[in-house]
Image (cartoon, rainbow, N blue to C red; front, side, top):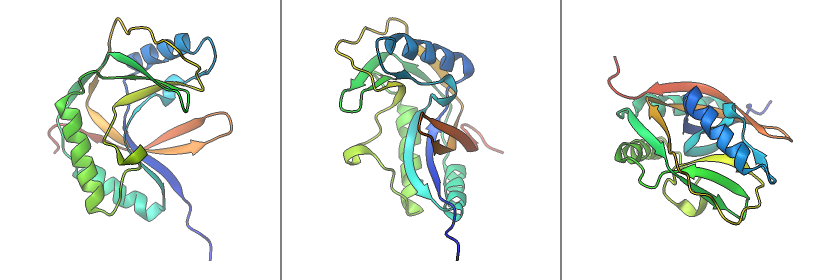
Length: 181
C-alpha cells in the first residue's frame, strides 16, 4: 500500500505587493554584506507552523481556518531583530496589535480542538516577525526609521516545498477577516 503524500504546511499572513517589495528591498540591503535575502514572493508572517500532514489532515486544517473569525487590522513592522544561532534577520512589531494576538489565540484554540499543536521553539507564544534574510552575519542592526505597514484582511493555509537553494510556497486556502457571508 502506498504511503499518503505528505504536505508541509503552516498558517500565515501574506503582505500586499507594495509591502512585500519594501520588505524585500530592506532584506536585500541588510544582507548585502553576506547572507541570502528572501524573495518578495516568499515573505510572510507565520501564525502557526504545523509541519508534515496528510491530505486528509490538510482538509481538517482548512476547516480550522474557516472556523476562525477575526477582524481586519493594520500591521506595522517597526523594528529589526536578529537570531544569531540561525543567522536570521527579521522585521517585527514593537507593539503587536491586539487583533493579531486574538487571531493567533483563536487559531491556536481551533488547532488544539482539532488535535494539532503549532510547532514553536520551546513552546513559546507567537513572536510576530517577517524573515528578511537568512545566513546573515550581523553585529549591529540599524534602526528601522520608517515602519513598513500593511492592512491585514486575511490569513492563509500555505504549503511549503523545500529545495536545496530555497523554499517555495503555495497558498492552499485563504480565509478573509471580518464579516463572512
